[in-house]
Amino acid sequence: MMKSAANLQPSAKTILLVLPILLVTVAPSWLAIAQRRGSPRISNRPAAPLGWYIFKGTDGDFSLAFPAKPEPFEPGVEGPVTSIRHYQVSTKAGKHFSINVQDLGGDPRSRDANEFGQEDEVIAAAAARERGERVIQVHRVAKNIIEMEVWQPLKDTQNKLHRLDHAILRRGRLYTLGCGSLSDNKEVDRAVCRKFFNSIRFIK
Image (cartoon, rainbow, N blue to C red; front, top):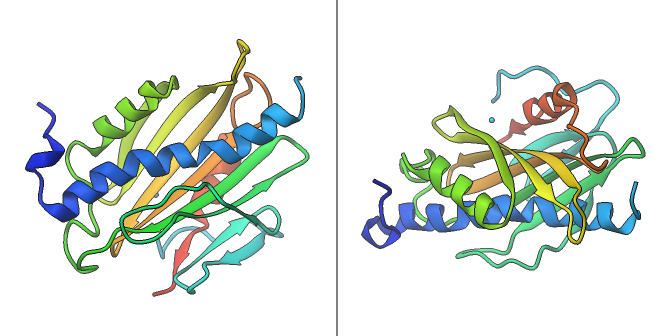
């Protein structure tokens, strides 16, 4: 049975409430881009893709390889400690890459600040379905990494956009990487998404 948020300790409750919010804020930027165009989980990971732009977090805590220099996007969502910091890139080939970063507070050395709860995959998937998304799969890559694959409907059409989300919980900070397709009903390039996800490095 799924645990009620009211019965959780404060730090765990914060993560359960914020995780679905962060996962949904991956989508709006590239979803808006797709609609405007008209129709049509570290340190031992592989090196960043050759020729990509190495982006560093605003406070120097991580680096991530994008296909070009990312631009900031304001999702307009406030969390318990900070607002969500969001950066994104869209390519001419119809691929979209993004990262959300948000602080959750609490002791950065605690278990709750470095490990997802037992029900978090279920909660994230339920939140996606409530938004009308079709959840293909959600699974835990590591104790602090959850991945989810969804198809998101385009408003007022029968078309859908494909997206992979990669959420990392580390030291009381939640990093949500999104890799999506801007082409109607077209699957993402999984190999490119994996290169993007694997390129993250934590500096401190």
